[in-house]
Amino acid sequence: MAHTATSAKSVSQAVEFLRHVCKEVPIAAVVLGSGVKVLEELTEQQSFSFDQVFGISPTIVGHAGSLTIGRVDGKLVAVLRGRFHLYEGHAWDVVTLPARVVVEWGVPNFYLTNAAGGLNHSFAIGDLMLITGVRDHLNPSLRETGLLPALSAPALDCENDLTRHLWLVGEKLAASDGSFRPLRRGVYAGLIGPSYETHAEIEMLRRLSADTVGMSTVPELVAASGTATQVAGVSVVTNVWTDEAIDGHEEVLKAARAASLRLDKLFRAAITNLKS
Ligand code: HPA
Image 1 (cartoon, helix red, strand yellow):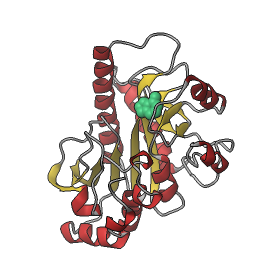
Image 2 (cartoon, protein in one colour):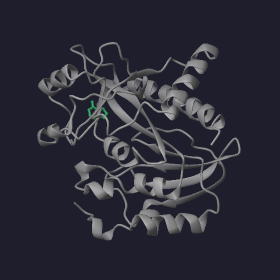
Image 3 (cartoon, protein in one colour):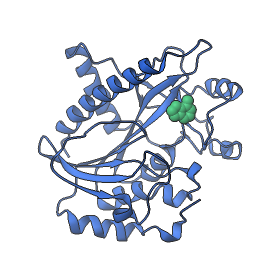
Image 4 (cartoon, protein in one colour):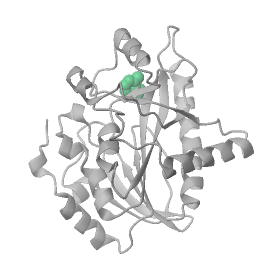
């Protein structure tokens, strides 16, 4: 609970800062979840801390929080490393601040990523899942149970051109590149956390036809939905909830690295092909 909304900048203050340091509006913004290492090298790159941009920093270890502006194949992008979570004690307004800034800045394409647990029995560690699932039954009334107001139609529009574009780019990569595992698609369940799910909760989420589970992304999806900014989400499956013992630590790290390499290819190809 280190930060309250009062220390954070307003959306317009943050946008003013960004317009001051960068004369051009990026064609895309990307939020990178924990351990997701992609778009590391951009050309004409300039970086700012979350404190400089938003007036606050994330509180969790390993999430310094930075916003880098640079180019991928000539296209200007903003890469946000880290985010604010509800489990850190941040208010909804703080958690959604970066997303609202991206929207107000006028960025047309917004990619959200997260590290997530795989619930779908066919998912493997290292899989990338496009968030396409919108389910009525994961509805806001479940907020009371600790489930975020997640994936409730029609408030969220995951089935948009940006998501379809990302899917097609993934299909092309899978067809042309032997090391590119085909994308999965499905429903992401957002929980407040901070603890991982119990077995009973896992079973409940599966019955709600959720395919991945994590503690982020939903607030940002909600904040950007219905605006001029199109949003697409990708889960990186970092663990799977099975009855069997999970793979050794080394294997998990290897899978995470391989997933980041694939995600990097996916984003570079997608951004290169963005028209506007
Ligand atoms: N549950 C919740 N959040 C997560 C998980 C998980 O299994 N894996 C990564 N983030």
